[in-house]
Image 1 (cartoon, rainbow, N blue to C red):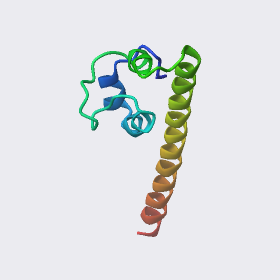
Image 2 (image 1 turned 45 degrees about the vertical axis):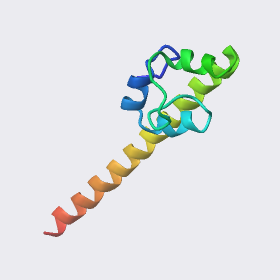
Image 3 (image 1 turned 120 degrees about the vertical axis):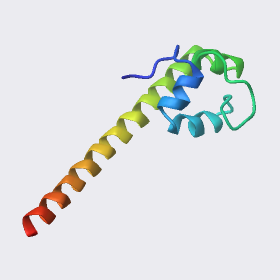
Length: 91
């Protein structure tokens, strides 16, 4: 699933926990900052003065981070399966 600018902030930080830190360092409301978290990613960005082009870049960056995390997790899963296979063969 791809992150889009109309995703609700609540859903974004729940489904993509890394997004909380990503947003926080950009001054966008998040769970830890104490601001209410209603609205979409686009709404939150516009409240902080980001242009449409900057919002598109934020969405692109979030998707790239998510893709990298997924690839890393797949690689770790393959490594874990390889280790388990070696252990079973050695038993």
